[in-house]
Image (cartoon, rainbow, N blue to C red):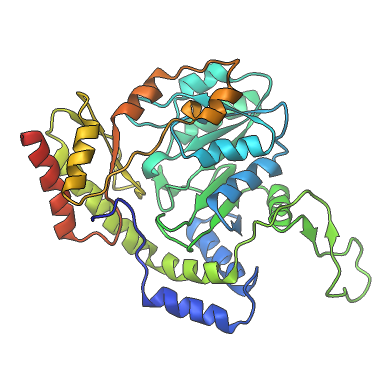
Length: 374
């Protein structure tokens, strides 16, 4: 079976894990600090806080902004459930917004309509590695005095107007799970451009612990700490950071390979009438997934045909406002998102990862063309 997503790991990652084992400490240690430094250097941001998952990164970003009960966060419904779950974990209410029909990115016109006095933040999603319109996003947020959290789980290595995602902005959250552009096994990071907020995130990721004494008074005991915030056990482990360091060295080659595959798909599928491609510039986007829209009610049949050819395809994602939990939560709202719901009926994710061979890419393309020729 040609998998839709997969990591590319090898001897370098095994050697890194072995070295981390040799340090004799598996928690938040020297490898985590080194991983943060290398990621900070790559992105060009003042603060990088490594955590144990992309979901934890989103949760800490929300917590650091003080978002909680009676607050609202506007977020596209067409995204992974983690966005909605982390908002409701704070006690706040996610307000689902539409996506643009062509890009599947956050529809900022719909966002503007849904801002209320209770809106505290906009959570934008760089879907498939394609950056949102960041200029307009931040202008809109600034005009009403609210914050921005960027879900960049798909977008490590993508650029917007020549600058890497995360190199500017408010709070930017990355994921390094098994199938992302790089993996730590499991992991994530919050990139931050505010010193005070970054310190809050650092303390909250490890149970609110602050090891600095309030007043310098000689040598500080190793056992001393203070707790100043509600915190969580969200820190990254030395072992996961060691894997991430090995992967980070490979990131330029990973991005190049992902872009090559996406461009081949674009070229091969562009002239199939019922297939619509997302308008993504793969010279600047570092794609995490490759998504097409299949019209004429043929999406499910194509997915099943690919399965008979030992090719896995998937759907990213089920709109969150259609999940039972959020339908109950939104029962008084009655959200209707026709553009998102139509997209859900048509989107199909094709195999895209660095472990794919050229022969396997050829097979995916040939199978899709065969299906529509028939």
